[in-house]
Image (cartoon, rainbow, N blue to C red; front, side, top):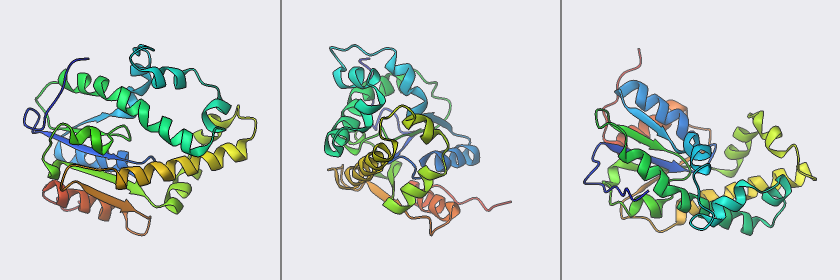
Length: 217
């Protein structure tokens, strides 16, 4: 848990943060497949990290891990937004510890909403190795509505419709945080709206990361 990376120590890391349902995972997967990179997905590690938290050291993370559906989604949206951000701060040392133990044989794409600009910025990475991808509100809603698991998430809420609206408002606020939060100079934000194709969004990421565009077969 004491592992702390810096941009100089890990020059082969690319950081893709941003809001949920913005296409981060798709872009990270395509980058990895095309360029022979490893992907570390913060979301995949979330529940494993949850098993290791200490309530004294990660109090918000710990409390939300035990919260009911109503406790998560029926609270005022500003409260939800604050408590969506804090667990990522508490999780970040776990992410760094994981990265410190990965083999150095492959470049690594680190992807997830947990990568707040303030956290990644504290590591001092090359700005051209870090990007935040955020959806417009309309695109975010359309993407969430395609995901069947959202019904399971809200299944135990007393007012599913209100919980859904709160969830969308919270994530809209989170997208704004990922756009407006003070960041290291030169960090890039890509807004996705569904008008551009995934290929075009990928091209924008490649250009920022200074990776060569490989023609489609």
